[in-house]
Image 1: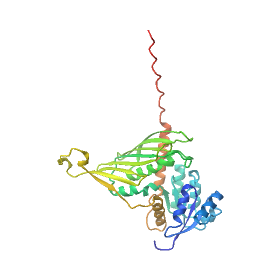
Image 2: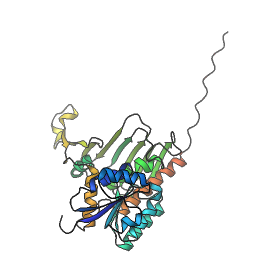
Image 3: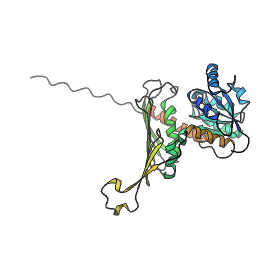
Image 4: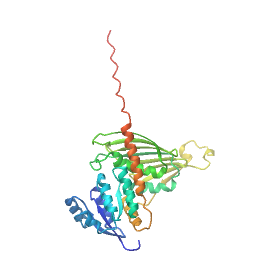
Length: 334
């Protein structure tokens, strides 16, 4: 990077914000300006561990930065984001962009009006498997995504649709690049007041279909994406950052093959190893410096959020399953 370093701070130092600060304080081209957290004890602990400054107020941090990343609870994303953007400060907002579509669109408008960079933290765009698959993706027609996780209290202030599934909704929108025309879904609240497990089927204007499942009450952790397209089939393990692409061999009809393995080429998908969050933060800093466009724009974040709320509405509209019929009466003895 050329030019003076970008002064960057972090707002909100919970489980995710801590890692924002951890990475930014050692990043090339960044002058780390410190952190702010509304919990003084948490702020002091993180500042001591990372050897940085905990500012006593949000305004104190904002007076010393060119850009911030925000990792506060979703219900206050809009409030904090507007305070940042009003000063023309570049903003990377963790996903989801806001807790309502109207608030998300307000953030997008405010960033445009102030000429401020706005990026949304859909970190799966930087997943190693997704990066490796990118050169092979061409008009996906069917996508199957499973994102299952054991229960943990973090993120349960919103439904699993906004907590976990929204990652995959963003990926699907980026891969399909067509508006959703029909959304059907069903979900259940199990351990929280909000939906904890959901399945959605989404049809798009170009004929593509995505089938997504997200759960935060599973015994095992799974993050898999399968993509079917005219040129082949991608199977991605997002948790491992690995994947495979299978494509038909040219002239396969004349090969006299008797097994699938004889008519397909297997391409092992590889991309350089890197921490996805670090790549995301580096891309944000480059965007702030004007060296490239943001990878996940505010508009893209708002679109993912709007689709998430369509899924939530479909869950609410789904008819309840009828009760099972009673067991047949036992035949009476003669």
